[in-house]
Length: 387
Image 1 (cartoon, helix red, strand yellow):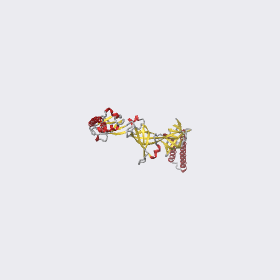
Image 2 (tube, rainbow, N blue to C red; image 1 turned 60 degrees about the horizontal axis):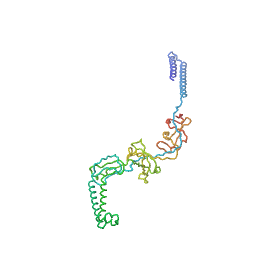
Image 3 (tube, rainbow, N blue to C red; image 1 turned 90 degrees about the vertical axis):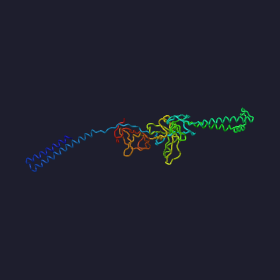
Image 4 (tube, one colour; image 1 turned 90 degrees about the horizontal axis):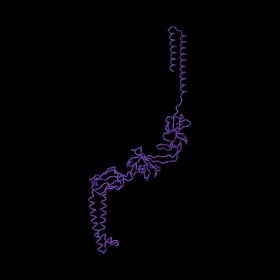
């Protein structure tokens, strides 16, 4: 192309130079001037024609040598499979058993070695209050019982009965003897003193972990709302809310999956155990699910922790596509299928979707070879090669 332009300019310059040379030698006749101009025009037309022919030849060569790029793609064969619907909501982890523990009697709390997060077993003593008074009361009640027992025996002897005859005594006589001797009241006093002595120790009602430890040694039990909270971290459930329109989606025994916001890579499973039959003021229904595999929960899930809950429900079979196979073009969903080495453009309509898949309503048929990789830059009828 550069050589053509050079020749063209050379011919023009030669014609112009010749024209001015004639003028300088006195060739002033009109006929000579017209003849020279005619030669100049012919030279220009000739050069222009050569340039056009040369450019056209180069373009033809480029068109002849062009071949479209062939994309390498991956495909799946479309078929009907059961589709899993998913409902996403947020919930809260709750301990099935959780209690605020406190002493049943007032007193000064004795020193204890208890820490928050410490595991304790059912029946384990947690702390004591000063129980000198309770011990004294128990001893006093025991002495009163012994005296009443002697009075009871004396009363029977006065009635002419020996102590070994008590098994053959009339029940009414025996009852009156116990009341008159004070033995009935003494036995009640002993039981009361024993119960009060039992109340000076705080015992774990179930196994779990210590939380919200408020009490401090050498302080009165009345200074605290409660001593501590005991949480059963081996028995957890998740509580979550759904819209009243979604109640039909959930049923007892249904499987749910739980993800902690602080542990997004760990998924826990649960099973729905209760659905509140009441709708709250916000149009929500509360659902609770027992957490499974409780051994992991002790170290990963905590009471009160916020979580994401995924409820799954399987539908009738449908044509299913991975989400990466569907593209957005001109505000509509597009899927490419491979047919005879070409990528064919298809608009599709979505019936359902979950995290990873679409269930199709229309647009494709079972057995279609859907392109799932290498399709982002494809156009209709673009040649492709299947991996």
